[in-house]
Image 1 (cartoon, rainbow, N blue to C red):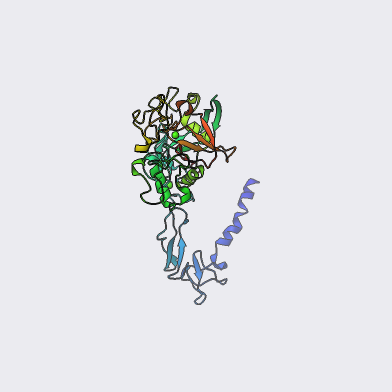
Image 2: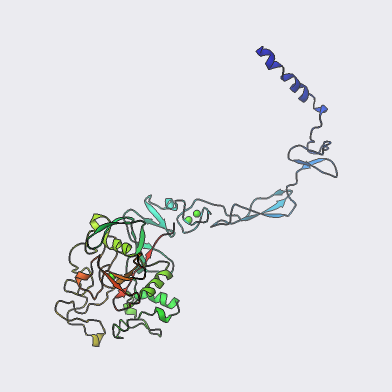
Length: 399
Ligand SMILES: [Ca+2]
Ligand SMILES: [Ca+2]
Ligand SMILES: [Ca+2]
């Protein structure tokens, strides 16, 4: 039974292919086309000569676009028709592995995605704005935004996680990591912004009417010389919240929320249950504020408003005579190594529940040590601008 079934189907197949002359096969190269004007694979029937020729893929000299995409670093190239076939693709830039360089190397429309950080030297590094950063231990050292340059534009990364917030600290969650300026915004940084904005009067730091028009604090005006270069590294003061927001937007940043600001001042977890950025010890030498436990910016008794223009409103013995803003590079390191979170300039922050509420954080050079705690906050109209009001900016990375 089985042997008969396997033999029978073989017979017609042998008969069919065994005699090619019986059917009209497509012609080979140079042969006549068959009666259906067909030729073998890859050949075409020349309608005039009725012979089979190599398929003409294109017309001599024709050009067409080639490559994969023109997104990111990629671009299309051009292919030219030569001898009936398309030549090589010239000038096209094809996708390559994404590396950390601020560019879209793999041409998917997003720069530095697809783990661009893997091109950084150490495995723990991360890629931000085209620069590799060590994410393991260093919290600062980020330079974000191309509008500004210089050390005082450095930012620190505040990790997502639980922070103990408030005078009676309660756990609160910072959902996403945020970058915050390491320093208060300086006069020099603000000057660049002010000039690029055409010295618009509404952006002029203006202490009127709280303080007399006395140098160095009222040395800003729209006429040259309007800016005291000696105070370039001091915090810009006499800044309203709208002016602060304007500056941060110009720099590609924004004002921090109160939660972000306090997280940056305290540090993460239980260790953040401190009262000052540096811990629980008095500010001695750590903060620029105005009682005797603060830094003594000027020797006692040397400040005279009328002569040297420094603001020293209070000359009583318990007050550090001559407390004024100090250069932002100096004091009060927080766990994330931000400076002057306590004292120096008071800093605008945003309360997300009530954005119309003006809030100043950290106290200022004009506050006593008991008013510059990490949880201290002053509510003020957002139009407030006096010799204590400054700010720093925050930044959320684009995902
Ligand atoms: Ca990409
Ligand atoms: Ca890249
Ligand atoms: Ca401050």
